Length: 199
Image (cartoon, rainbow, N blue to C red; front, side, top):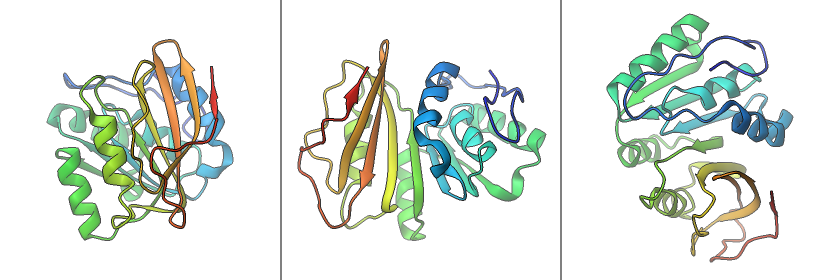
């Protein structure tokens, strides 16, 4: 697995740990084609980071800073090796902790992000929990107009309540769907979404 584009293009990414399930190159390519130049200068949060491929791809394409979170110590050890190989220590933080605990700490620190990426395990309800947590109006981990992108099974139903997050687009690639949500502090949604699906 390699970084697809940007200043670290073609650099190999190592993946370690039992829980690391890297986003495929094709899926990452589609994701960042949609993100485009909006990643430049952004603050990024990568949840269930695994190998760190999404966060590192964002940095390669011009993001300013990234926090990468995974509960598996072997996975985060692999992420740190990747970061060291890229000499990217000054623009990254790596957290070995559960996502819920990490979000709680980030809220206490009043961190704000332009992009949050998440690739949780399929079929365990993590997508619904994340949408509820990140879209909670009082939490505001995303800046207004920021985006939350989550990779889910293409069979996963849409969450019934996304709070301040509005579904902008869904892109399906085989058994995987990428769902793009936009933070809108002024217009909280309750299960409503734009017709942004494509295949």
